[in-house]
Image 1 (cartoon, rainbow, N blue to C red):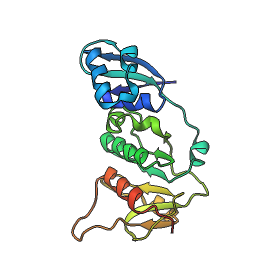
Image 2: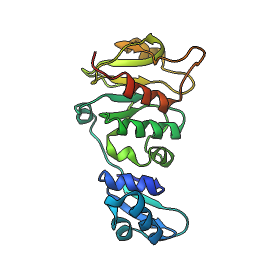
Image 3: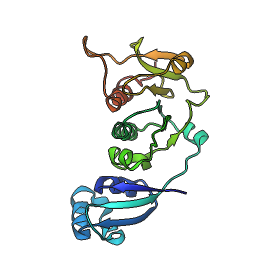
Image 4: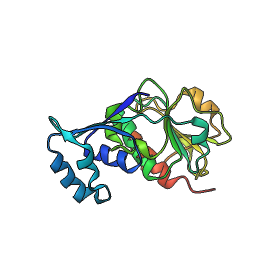
Length: 213
């Protein structure tokens, strides 16, 4: 298995909280790291002193890359977030953070960007470890309805078990995915506002459009 890099206190905090297998931790000041834990993560007090060794710079850790089974992930309750070829690793990570907070079943991504890249993990504050995050070639064929989040769609709720598809920041969803979708749903927006940031779109959809019809 490949190792993944956790850059910063919050990424390490959430990795520990959600059961990641931590391999190494370095910090310029391990005692300061433990003091941060006392303030920001009291449930983890003692873990940082136990794991960290002195090193240069800020907090940096490595963890074992979890391997998730796609079929098992799709059986988890809640909506599945599918990100089609996201371009910006920080946005990708922020979308994962939102999905974890909303208790989504999983996040699936396609395209060239690695969802487990250190920049994406930093963007999620380590919440990759809170739910399955899996790279796929396309939305899986499943009994879950495939819902395209699209500006030309309808304004209505979607089922809690949907696969919610979000396009890239610049180009939106591909024609192939739109043709496959069981429905197209739009996020209500003020006239003249053309689009939302990817992570904001995921947040608005999960918190505003996932009520059962």
